[in-house]
Amino acid sequence: MTTGDLFADHSPADDARIALGEAAFVLRGFALSEAPGLIAAVDAIAQQAAFRHMVTPGGFEMSVALTNSGALGWTSDRRGYRYATHDPLTGNPWPPLPDVFLRLAHNAAAEAGFHGFTPDACLINRYVPGARMSLHQDKDEQDYGAPIVSVSLGMPAVFLFGGHRRADRPQRIPLFHGDVVVWGGPDRLRYHGIAPLKDHPHAMLGSQRINLTFRKAG
Ligand code: MD3
Ligand code: FE
Image (cartoon, rainbow, N blue to C red; front, side):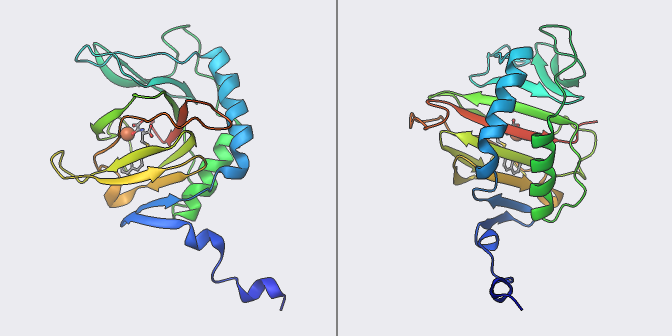
């Protein structure tokens, strides 16, 4: 037996896994070592499919800028929310999911008990100070059986984790650079959002927060 085995049932990874609900976990720092590669991949994607502010069906411009990678990309306009195979700005397919994205999403899902997660969509949200995302449910996907994996990079944010009704008072959970949130099963349709961002510039990303949200949309 090696010394390492003495600690096999109590690894740092266990301490860093915080349960938010029955099937919702924060994995503190899970993406930290991959952050430089993830950020380089986001830059490459944004050169092909620029960040843009979409308009909601109600006619409001979102404070969060977004782009996508993967076979399907989430879009919004006056006609509604939907997933599309092509970027409406260029007419090109969304850039494919880089290996560093796929590996991280797969490994984070497994860490939370969801084995064999293969996302087909990565929504990339970019926040600057003051940007926010109001309480909503993610329900534009075909299969609610698959989990969702979300990766936080750059400035910290306060994540609002609500219940199954919009009026349920949300828990406020700080999310930091390198944190990953995984949720599925009974927590898949919970209301959630992001409080208006404060300006706490980050060493790698300055006054920005980037969130990668991996989904099985099709
Ligand atoms: C949902 N993005 O793009 S993801 C979205 O940080 C979105 O940009 C946010 O919501 C962002 O649709 C939050 C993180 C998250 C974490 C836990 C959840 C969403 C959740 C638990 C239940 C439902
Ligand atoms: Fe969401």
